Length: 454
Image 1 (cartoon, rainbow, N blue to C red):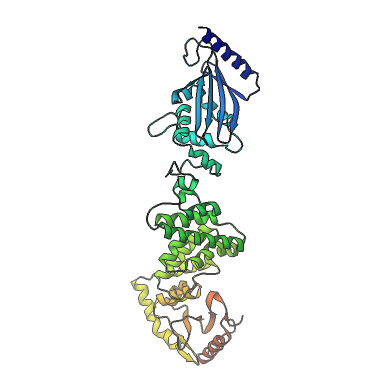
Image 2 (image 1 turned 120 degrees about the horizontal axis):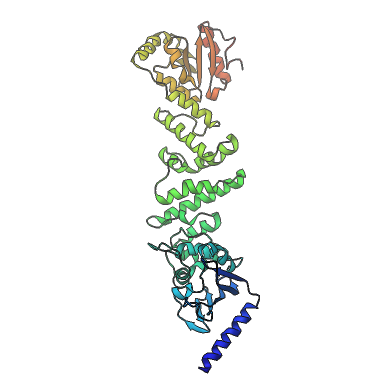
């Protein structure tokens, strides 16, 4: 009986010492607005803490006791050292006994975690609490099972925070006993390098077949993008990871990614990346996503229309896209096609050979559309004018290469009204001379010809 008395006196002396120690403290208030007890933080470390909790005396709460039980908890994640004492006697480190140290409401949670955290582990407890406080079908997050689980099965969380990995709640833990963050997450050395060097999100990576091949390609592309960032002075790494790298690991490229377009249309990947991510932004003021979507439509339309020679990296993407769209949408019904063919014989009278050049007539509306897409202008929209006899459209070609568009010519009322090459540029000197000979032969005026007089 005497030893119990001495022990009780010793507990009370320690309580008084703790209360006057100046330790940071926080009071637990119950639903009835009454004080349940007070937490005192003796020590907090980057990897744990040492706390006391002094319960207020209670006749009904056994965890509080008639005299107000003194509880003490030591928690060291790094060295896996932990214990709980109640009135100086060590008790089992269990969820229930841990809970007795934290009789706080959910509203107190952020303040409690802040109280036991250091500058170097801010977020560790709240992040891991959200993950471990309730698992599977558990509906309510509890301090007891959170701290118990964190220490017994998830102590690697402290290792991750030490490495500066703060938000990992949504990432798969592959090896809880791993000695490094890389091992914990099950990443390859190359993936870890991409995470550290380029800031690639952990959720981007995957495991499975062809990982080494995917890793090598990913780090090669990321290194290339980094070099472009330095060259152009703009940041594109976040967009590139989201649109390209994540898809690469999933074996399924998004249709609004440069890699998808490169693979679909047999284009050089790096050249397309440079164009869509950097050149369109810096030179044309087009965001990455807009550039990819505009280009996707542009390359699809020009490919479907069967053109081989066209600008795959247009200096003015939006203009090229709009021209291709106008040409692509040219459709003739049966009656309109008959009108077109009725004009063809008359138009063919202009076909001529002029030294190294030849003037030819478009045989079909598709020929006109192709001319517009290859040279980057909207002559495809002239199908209706040609069909109605309002315009005559002719093509200037090299005599030995009739498939390669050079200059498009329009004739109206015995006047050559337009003669333009690629992107509405004037004809070259030799081309202009050939067109002037053609005009003289057919007695066509060139006084106000766009292209020839520029």
